[in-house]
Structures are given as C-alpha cells and as structure tokens.
Length: 392
Image (cartoon, rainbow, N blue to C red; front, top):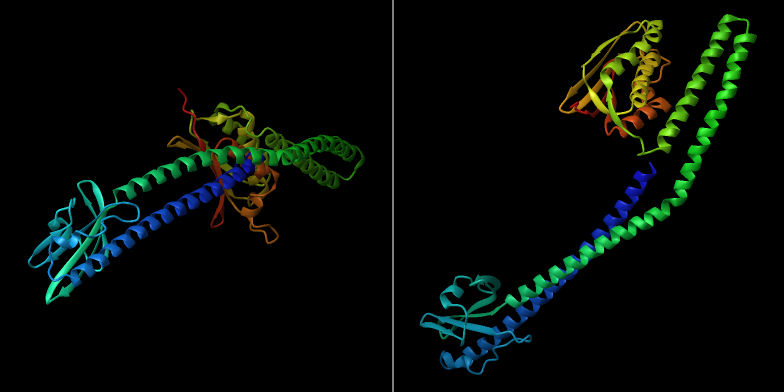
C-alpha cells in the first residue's frame, strides 16, 4: 500500500515537472518563432514601401529603380524585389527565384510562404495603379536561416527538457522516498501492533469459550455464547492474516498451484455449514488448471467467498459455482440468492465489506487479478478472474 502511494506521489510530481518543462519550452520556441517572423515581415514591408515610393516617383519603370535600393534587412539577409507590369517583369539582381514561380505564390496584401529548391522563402505582395497601369510589387527573402535557427533551438530545448525530465524523475523519487520514511515507520508500527493485539486476544477468547462450556448450564445460552466467541475468534484471525499480508506486501513467493482439486476440497468443507441453512451448492471445476499463487492464499480466498454464501445467502435456495479457463485467464464464479429479510443489510454492500472481503481483495491483487460482486435481480454474483499458469 505504501509502495503504491509512493509511486503515485512520485508520478504526480514527475508529471507536474514534465508539464512545466513542456509549457516553458513550448513558450520559448513559439515566442522566438513569432519574433523572427515579425522581424522578417517588417523587413519585407519596409522594402515594399521603399520600392513603392521609387516606382511612384520614377518617370518610368526600369531596372534602374533597384540601383539605389538597400537590399538587406537588419540581420544582413538579402531582400529581393519583383515588379510585375503588363509590359514585363523587372527583377532585382541575383534573384534566386524565377518571376513566374513567385507570381504563383503571391497573395495581394498578405504574407505567404514558399518552398523552392529546398529553400524556404517569405513573400509579401501588393498591387497599385500607376498612370492607369496596374503594377504589382513583390518583396521576398530567404527564411532558410530562420528555419535552421528554429530547428537548432527546438533540438536544444528537447535535449535540455530530456535531461531535465530525467533529473526530475531521479530527484522526485528521492524526495518522495525520504518523505515517506515517517509514514513507513508508522505503518510498520501499526502492523506490528495489530499482530501483537491479535495474538493477545486469542488467549482470553479461548478462556471465555472454556468457561462457557463448563459453567453455563443452559444449553441454548451456551450455544449462543460459543457462537459469538467463535465469530470473535474468526475476526481476530482475519485481522492477523490481513496484517501479515500487508506487512509482507510484494514479497509473497508465488508458485504454480493446481487449483482444480484444491477448489473442490475447500468447497466440500463448507457443505455441512450450508446444509444447516438448507442451501444446496453445486458446481464444477475444469480439470488441470494452474495459477501463480500459494495453496494457503487460494484456500483462504475460496473459503472467504463460501463463508459469504453461508452468512448472507437466503435459506432453502440453490447456489452454483464454477472454475473455468478462457484466454489464459481463470475465472471462479459463485452465484447465490440474496437474503430478503427486512432487517438484512443490502447484500452487495454487506458482502463486499469486512475483513474477509478485504483479505479476498488483497489476495486477488497479489495474484494480479480482479474480483467483482454484483447484483442480477435477486442473485448475487461473485466473480474472480486471475491469470492462468499454463502447465508445460
């Protein structure tokens, strides 16, 4: 139980650190991408305005328009310009992209991206009228360096994040382990106290039973007292067994157990108790079934479930059980009619509480299986599913 709590705390702390690192790294990457794009867009707009002014004031459009233009942005990257008119195209020197290719990727008044010869470009285009003639100005620059920079930053953030996550995992595991040391000591002391108390209670209960047998003359009272003492003794034994299971958590040495015959034997022991309440229990077990457990654990599990039938099933009714295998899983199924007495507690709740069912759940958990108790009309159906051990 403490180990599970330790893992849960560590997982939450690690998850929180991972989310924090992802959010921080994502914010840095997105902010850098936004800033670089904004700077590029400003450079393209600035170049567009400069070319536009030259075109508007020039008596005619020619290649001379580009002669005095500043063809670099603030980062020193080259800017290129295309002027498209019905009479022809005018392109700045050393343009890396053909005019026809550029014109197919432009959108007036908007920024667009283009991949050409494995190089990334950012484009801005707009159209105006000069002397009754439409003129389209296209400014563009290579953003390949921006992509390389962003890729490098992304890889660096991923590397730093991975190292951070590994460091956080180790650190949080250490912190959680240190924080749980007091709880572990308290839990151990609690288990030891339960074991000692259970042992100590056995003696006075046995003494009380002996006194009742020898000093109580009236037979009916003697039987009632003996029954209650026996119930108290069984409860003490359950507490002792559950404490032992919890104290040795994850240390039970499981082994292949032939459960087919063992289940038959355990159920046969309960037939006299069932007959006292006129409950007829019938069923079968598929032969040759093995699972990873111990004979003691499986016997205790089946005994607990049968005891529930004895205590909570309606008198003069039928009950059935089965032990079968399917898809590498073993299923034990027990079906009995629920009590209908007005004073009875609702069967599913009553049958899933108490030390007996706590022990059953703990045993099934140790065998990496599951247990389910549900109502189907007047019937209570208890199902245990555990992994099967194939006999070689």
